[in-house]
Every structure is written in C-alpha cells, then in structure tokens.
Image (cartoon, rainbow, N blue to C red; front, side, top):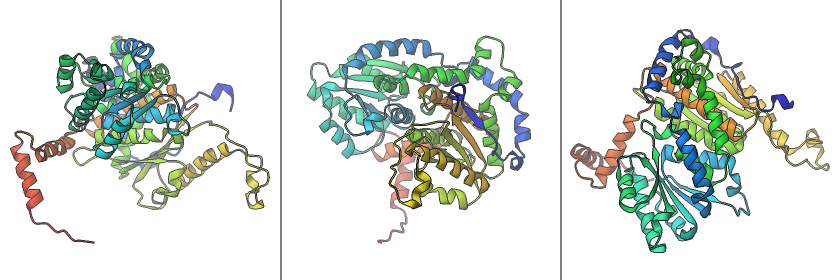
Amino acid sequence: MTAGSRHQDILDWTNASWERLPASVALRARAGEMAARLAGEIAAGKLPFLATPFMAALEKDLAELESGFLAGFEHMLLLGIGGSALGARALQKAFAPGQDLPGHTGKSIWIMDNVDAAVLEAHLNRLPADKTLVYVVSKSGDTIETIGQYFLVKDWLKAALPGNWKDHLLLNTDENKGYLRQEATTFGIRTLPVPDNLGGRYSAISAVGLVPAAFLGMDWRALVKGFQSVAAPLTDPVLTGKGLDAATLAAHPAFEFAVWGKALMDAGYLELITFFYIPAWSSFADWFAQLWAESLGKDGMGSQPLPAVGATDQHSVNQMFLDGPRNKACLFVERAGGPEGLAFPKDMPPIFDYLQGKRFGELLPAEALGTRMALTQSQVPLVCLRLGADDAHAAGKMMALLGAATLLTGWLMGINPVDQPAVELGKRLAKARLGAAGLAEEKAALAAFTTGGRDERGF
C-alpha cells in the first residue's frame, strides 16, 4: 500500500447486485425530488445533525471543558439510553480501547444504558465520588430509565459530597424545557443544550458523543471534520444560497446507498448485515443498527439490521448468512491496512507452514477477503466500505454517510425517518404499570393483557 493511498476511503459497489434490483432505476430518477426536500428541510433548520449549525459554539464549549472542567475527573458515569449512549460507546471502544485492557490507569467512562439495579449499585459502591463526573443525557429530560438512575446517583453524590455534589454533574438536555432543565435551573448545575430537531440516534456528532470523546482524550476535532467533509456537499449549497440540485445529490454516496437500501427492500432483501472487520469498531455496528431500525421500521416496511463482527461471527452466525434464506444483503466494513501484530514463531508444526514468515495481523484481512467472497458467491448483495485508516476522521465520514443515507432511504420509502411512534407505546405502558397519573387506556389494556386467558406451562 502506497503512502498516497493510505487515507483513501472507498465504497466498493462491485458486488452490489444492481442487476437484481430493478427498482433502482426509478429510485435514481427521484434525485431532483429528494434534493428539493433536503434543501427545504436544511434551510428550515429541521436537520441539524447534517448541517451542524450548533458546532461552532459547541467546539468553543468543548475546548474550554477539555482544558478545565473535564480535566479534574478520572471517571465519567454516563446516564443515557439508546442514541444517548450508543455513539459514546462506539467511540470509546474504537478510540480509547485501553480502558478494556489489563493494567489501565487512565481515564474511564462507564455507561449506564439499561435498567440494571445490580450494575448501578456496583458502580455506586466502587466509583470514587470525588473523582467522578456524572454525565446525564436526555433530550426530553424525562426519559424514565435515565431519570430513575439520576435520582439515585444524585442522592449518592449528595451523601458523598454534600458541599459540592452539583459540581460533579453535567446535564445534556433541552435548552428550555423538561425535568433536567428544571433541575439545572433550581440547583445551578452545569448544562449543555441538545439542539431542537436533533433526535437521539442522529446525535453522536453533538455534545452527546463529543463530551465523552473529549473526556477520554480522543481527537474529536478530526471526528467533526470528517463528518462535515461528507455532509458539506449536501448542506453547503443550501446554506450559501446556491441551492442543492439533482446532479449533486445523485453523485453523493449517501443517495446511492439510499437507492440501494430501498431497492433491496423492494426486491425482498429484508435483512441488512453490517459486518465490521475492524474489531475495535464493532460497537459501530450496534450504533448503526439503532439508526437504521428505529428510523426505517415504519408502517410494515423496513429491513432488519444484523450487526456482526469479523472474524468472531464467522464462527457463530455466518452459516445463516451464507446458507440461510436469500433475504439478506451486507454492508461490509474493513480497513485497507491494520497493525502488523506479532510474528509467528519458527517452530510451528508442518501443517501450519503457510504461516511461516507471516505476522498475526495478516490473519484478519485474509479472513475478511474470504468472508466477503463467500458472501458474494452465496448471492448476498454486498457493498464494501473500505477505510484507508481507522482513525477519527474516517469514523466521522462513515457516520455522516450512514446518517444521511438512512434519512434519504426513509424518504424514498415514503415514511418519516426521524420519529419512532411505535416505541412510544411501550414507554406509556411501562409508566402505566408503575402507576403514573392518567394513562387510563393504557392501564385498562395492561389489566386485560396480564389477567386475561393465559397459556403458561412449566418446563
């Protein structure tokens, strides 16, 4: 690999199977319609995740936090769920992996993204309160899982640090409303705003993900620059008043991916494997799974994302990918180069002679090539995202590409890719079960569901 090619990031469409996706022709013809809609929504401020109008102010805030406030803590306890946590976890795993290795002595982030009483109690028993920053992330300010944790953690801080407990809190929430905003006003707790129209699963490149990145010493500026470099062809023509035309959108890889995604659904490929052959980036597969599933699973439509990591999942679920129902496509993510690793010893048994003179780091790209070829030979439509370097800039580019592609796929489907109406029902039912005021209809439905005819059997 030459120095000039090292940082070239490529989308390889060679095995996308366009010949089996006849709807793609008509979908590409909708570029003008999609460009007009995208331009209108950007101009109206409805897509801040793409245009990032908040970034200049946030970069200033982050620089100040990084050099001052954040430097005073050794641990961050992040309270958040879904999009409030998945981006932060993916970034930590990719760019601060030392926390997960033996002998770690640097800063650590602990993410409470579930209702797990035992785990929360373990964290509060073991973390040193005087060295811990609690970062609470909830746009609405009343997400029950996060707020439930907040009540308990707030009491923990007050008991351990009665004089300055509020100085160990940082709230990321709506600028004007919600319970967390009330708490900030009442107690003078430090806050960062979640911009209007910024949904959780689209929020990783905002304070939601960038504060943890800054805390852990990541190159968050490169992450932002990478993101903006992919978003700029879509946003800059609108923001400068030149207008976004059909040709510009049609040439953008996010639109091509959206056409492919929708054409796959039309052809019956209703499961999308996201196979990451960059082990440290495996949590990005979970980040994308929420982005794709929660955005596009509407009105009986969508495709199911299937996160996978190579080479681990070659030995678990790849049999289904290769020889199961032919309803799967694949986004295959790999890097052009990686660490060389240790050299294999010279005294291996003869059966392993093919490893002589090689290094451990050569195994993964060989297995990636083998799996990619096997998938295509098994008639799995596959697009390969090949990164010149697995650095923060490349991660930002990938996140912008997949975020914009998800949005455009939803529009091509005729659904709203920024809401999640079905999820809200479960939230209301949970609140009804806990005795929240009102919710009479939900309480009646719960009573019928839990006391109606049951078919329960021991095993």
